[in-house]
Image (cartoon, each protein chain N blue to C red):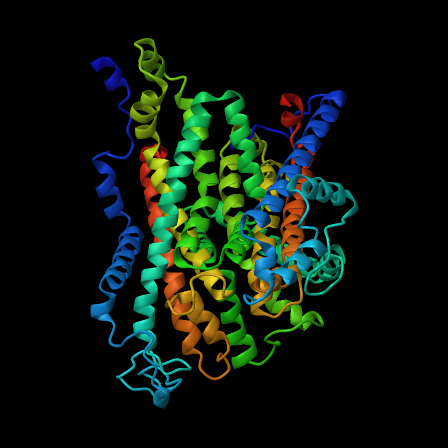
Length: 323
Length: 297
């Protein structure tokens, strides 16, 4: 993505254009969510009879019928689907078979732990990736760049749970400076957050590097240099702003990666978040909970990307004009 | 007719400089060699492995690797909690990793290539529906989708291949679609159309050869991500059943003995990382070589 000088000239803001773009993006997000909800509903039902999955193999027909009726699975599929869609806006997604509570309550009780984990990981990722990516771009082709890019490649090829196990081995088993697992104070957060951040550091640093290299090679940077602006000033005033756009996009996508990665990281560190809840729900065949968890993950991802999409309009006037 | 085929010639893969360019890249040679070794180990596993990977010998439980004190050359990389030989399990584990990686990448590649070609070439509502489908698919973190499907269908090697194959098509489809969008207005396509070549034939004979390079690159990267995804599922206990040796399953066992016997978890983790790294590097080299910009000095 080559970016002409965004910061140099601002076209007049097109007010109605912005509104139209926002509305169309929100509508798209709602449509995507509707399809996700539909897919979650049919996926669960296509994948076998939940009643057979829940009950032991030697259950009687009577027991099956009772459970089927109590879960509302004896009604026509269309009725079930409409009920399910109707319940969505009110977050009524049935009761968890294991916890015997509304699934929304069970899910939301685990949200803070996952938010804490994913949020810290994102902050760590940005704190490491921005300097690393900028450094590599400025040292392009030299030893520093090769070093950063090697790190990036290793980071991208290393599964989160393996990073986690290595960190436990070094910091909890060898040096005994941090707890190996569990949930509690800041000390408990360090290893899981770093584990989860590794992959995102690699992705963001790599992208920032290549997009900064693109921007730094463009005409307006040459002009800035000709005017006598120092490298630091150029990078901060012109480079970053133009390189930010693809990075913001990928940070949005990284939220999905972080949520997916949280599933594994939480398992490694026995972190009581959504990821662990989901894995347990799958192992326990708690299908209302699985369905709700899938929806929740997808909804978070769609909403974050909608916000990212909308932030373009603020960062890049060209998007405003073309949409 | 001949004029059409010559204009359709910018096929990027069969460039004579390809092999030479790969060889010039030292890291690329290393990556391909490592990958070849892993493939060889997987293919020859029954011949190479010193023991049956599932043979238990409780008298030699948790023996350290040969070079540390207490280790013996009978088990070069030590034994696990059931006295199984770790080296033999590593060698056999490579089979599952590579098989799942290759099959899943192939399945998603075929699916993604067809969808990307058709969406990019035909455009219109068909394209809009397919790309919306890609958005929906992207809305699920892949590991979650795989978990949900495996969780309900049951676990098994081929379920894992199927799930990873069906969830991996989006990246192929998006890249191919955008390539095709720029190709379809080119002269050789217009000319082929003008002389009455049918749409499927244009896609197969004129567009597909031009997108093989990005297809191969994404395919390689997808192999790496499928290998990691299979290991992740097996680590969670939701992938390939326990009787089959997998690196992810070994890691999950090993984590329990991390305090006393680091080697049970560290070796499968290293194997996984090195293999994924080698595949990713091979993909990077392919991309650099296939990218025409790389030839500009």
